[in-house]
Length: 345
Ligand SMILES: *[C@@H]1O[C@H](CO)[C@@H](O)[C@H](O)[C@H]1NC(C)=O
Ligand SMILES: *[C@@H]1O[C@H](CO)[C@@H](O)[C@H](O)[C@H]1NC(C)=O
Image (cartoon, rainbow, N blue to C red; front, side):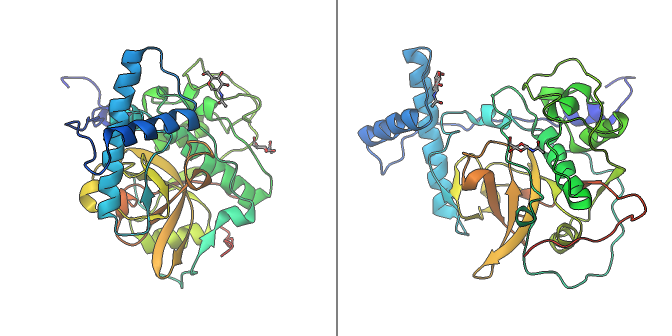
């Protein structure tokens, strides 16, 4: 790196990795005609047209790869997760990962450990009306999940503290980002730093999402934050925070999400390494089904992505690296710092 100043942004961009899976084999149990039939159904369901026969053949090859990956996940699934054809089935892993970011630094201070209180059995902020509609970061070229997750976090906290619904501008975060990475992938802490620097965020209506990084504009803010904090990397501590303060952002490995259909996803560690986090989303609650504990995660791939835009992931074993970097903005009502709120079960 020579004498270049090592800003945290530069350090992070160096960590970016994108790998393509090797090999191209048909799933043994499906005949070629069956796979072709599945692909035709997929093209109709997800409204696909390809610009040339060659491109269609290429996408068909990728589709077969995705079927294989889904089968692998299904065969080794430890939870109740179901995998299959999704709207991402004709995307390469590289395109898929291209929507995301690389891992953030772990240098920021962590909130001091506090003795555990009794943890509510379940929590779902959606039931309090504190979670805005699932959005769609769309396109294959904008790695903006970090901005969506940070904005969703602020929207939820704003509602919880002020009872005012807000749709805030993701585009403002992208355009005005302090690291300037925009669609190249960014970091949640940079999103919060940007919001602090902008003295708040304006509304989505005033500054709508375009999916491209553009010139930073100034608008009047309609919500603001006091700061942000990292949380302890402990799933009980995280749950306690979510139950008593509100949704938080989490960084995780998206490997099992490309083919996810429904259920509580619990992939083998080797299929979803906790050391390879590449995506950011909003943790909005937790619960359990027949003693199988799970997290509820709001994603930013639209409402049509499985479970109406949400993902349920096994809770209790750092599945897919979910505890890697829990981070949240802080929003206080003036005169009532840190007041506790209660999440509906
Ligand atoms: C399907 O795709 C075409 C061309 O991309 C578009 O014009 C049309 O609106 C799409 N239809 C649906 C239902 O999404
Ligand atoms: C936020 O956006 C959703 C979905 O587009 C809309 O239904 C809702 O009314 C908006 N809320 C506000 C406060 O603008």
